[in-house]
Image (cartoon, each protein chain N blue to C red):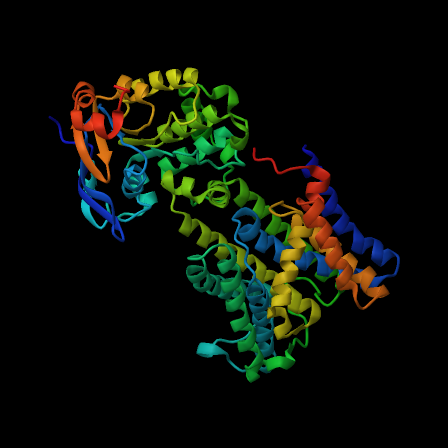
Length: 249
Length: 323
């Protein structure tokens, strides 16, 4: 198998006596969707924070495309190709959808230290941003202020922003959260096609989506990965059923 | 043309017209008032880059305003006496030199203050910028070489090539010209890539970091640019009064600049001009009626914050629109 794009090895993080991350190792291979599931309090958020750079791990390594990123600041990791969406939509609320994406295009192009050329007249920004909005089906809402978008549209916008970066690995934190059944179905189809762009580490509570999308699943309980495997392996794993899935599988 | 642009144009032309009308009507003092408006508007335009675009509520911009003033005073006093300054450099009576030195000095000071202050945010940022400005204030108070608490007089106003700066009308035009340059620069910055990043940092710095732009260098650059522009205003202010004292560095001054911006409209291009005009007019009219004019200014400020968050510009032109 090819080298993993994103590799987390033996990651530890404690808050006092609480072991939030207890020797977690997860690999994300090219072209795959790897779902991370687990009950509330399992340490999913802490793990994501460590991958993104907002929480420092106590020990262990995180490598992206062969490069150790575990000690780099958030922005540096993003520049190296870690594209993330947030559990709760995190946008520049006063900017239009287009300008939110333009900011990411601008970041991808390198420098934000240009003081004189107006961004709205810069076709390299507006065209690229519009293209990403079209791909997520949000082109008609390009000029709507981000804070006025509906919940589902905000989620779409987050993905458009991630698409604007030269992403090597996506980290999607509960993209289905708060979506209606119809929206979830559309988004599931979209994520399925997104894996051609870059592999996806998908943290999700919506089991229908996880089972439909994931190539592999890791189950996190009390900061440990208790099982990693294909959808069928996980469905039939007795430990997983007891800890998490219950009757759902 | 949008409503805000029309309003901006009207404001710019009105400020230009006032001194001409005053001169024709034989009211030379009004020219000084208009000059004061232009200078305070320039100082607030500087602050507005940090505060309005970047959301950095600096309560210490008097430091940069005052440093600009002291640069003007110190350079001109050395030029007058012929004594060399630091490193044996001569003084200067040229405004252009004074402005450059003021920008350089304030830029370095802004860099030093910014590097430390920008590690904090919210109330802590307000307090730490205040603390730094107070340090500069007490330093000036206790530095006898340049007048200490008595301040420093500028015997003859600094010079500008080809212009007699002692004539009020000429000096107004210089200040007005510099103000326009400052406004145009801040308009360019606002619509540029840097401005986009800066405004996004104000709205959501987590998002900005997540797309790969580090917020700290963006904030620091804005803070330094902001300090430099405010320092030029300080140099002009010292030339207007032909006097510079620690009061230019005091926290009242920092507060006054913030009040100007709030009255005019936070983050609005011409907010500082509208705010400075309102402030100077209130000060002049109410100040003529009562010594307690600031009490009434407080009421107006309260009404602005409660009922007209966007200040004068917001009241007339509506909410901010991002292209």
